Amino acid sequence: VAMTAFAAAAIADAPPMRVGFQAMRIGFAAYILPFAFVMQPALLLGAGAADILYSIVAGAFAILFFVCGMEGWCRGSDLNPVSRIVFIIAGVLGLFGGPIILALSVLLAGGGYLISNRLPGEKSIDRTEEL
Image (cartoon, rainbow, N blue to C red):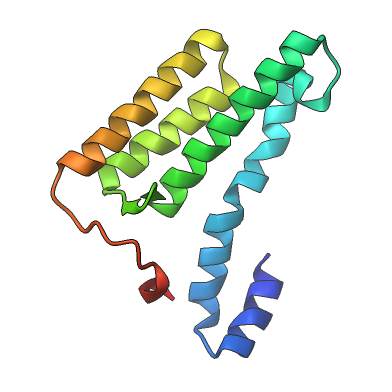
């Protein structure tokens, strides 16, 4: 990821290390996905239809929560640091847990979103200032 990010930074005339770390944050979900295949083999479509459907839905929610936490942005508003940690925990729990843990993960992410919107902080959606 970093080699292409460095090339993109040179083209965009941006700081290479900053662009590299941003690329790592965006691609971090791809780094943990192989572990999800080990923990939930149904993601590789090697189980019954119900297990495959559950694993795909659980994986989609977990990756969504994890990426929202890593990026610090969800549904048009910035997340504060507490909400980011809550979203990351919800994503990891949802990816590696069972049905009860997934329900807990969804409730945890919902709580993180409510915390983000209740606590004072910046609520803009303009993310171009980071680079």
